[in-house]
Length: 317
Image 1 (cartoon, helix red, strand yellow):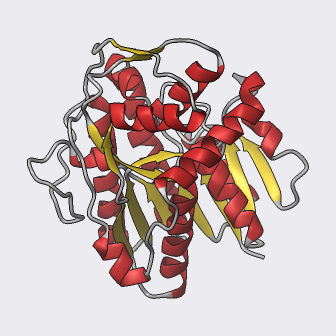
Image 2 (spheres, rainbow, N blue to C red; image 1 turned 60 degrees about the horizontal axis):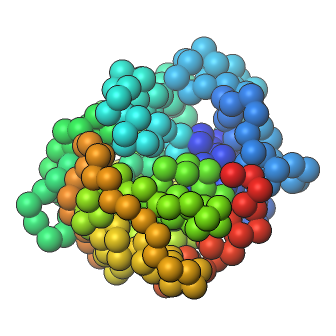
């Protein structure tokens, strides 16, 4: 049985990917640094799941885990992902996002491990480009703290792959949404929770920023496909965008959620956020052509599934 390591296994994408891999009969080790976490209820008593305590920023802790386990692949999803927090705490953000990524790659280099390393980059790694679509060969130009941390980590992954023949897959995803998202500062959970708790939604941005939105189960499948491609073929660096055909501004998305919940709109635009890129859209023809991935879930389907999950679990928030 294959065994993989997942950092960030309790995050939005992590929960989805863990469950996806377990269904594929792959043993999963989650690296978890938090002492308590509501999300753990979704993994209790699940066969073939191992939880290791520790932080990937601590190199010695990683050495301990790699001595204990033999892995067939790594999915590095763990990161500080909040844009506003990154703006206010740039050192902490870069330490987590950049040094953490470097530590894992250095373990692979030192131990000469020929296993796939799939890195969760972001559309934010591109920064803000003056063009309609972003392509994989576009320059990485993140200037705000969070964006820069993803640009730097992305480039470090490419460097280790090119320099040391490490099998690296880099996935630059659009805005992911779905069940089990406990980051309540994200627009989808924040909107749903505000309705379910009968509170006015405070929109920190202007509401005009446009993004691609993609359902989490589509992204999990992309990660598995890239992992399989690296494992089964003699390829050492794969870089893909995972976007969608649903490109909306924040207000358009919020209004769709209100419609699904069948409630009157109840929001106020504060426009106080900092470090926001205005418009981003990912071209994903490359991954579609090379390994056959494309998103299959509609925006409405994903939002309905997500809304129903929060209705069922609102007591957790």
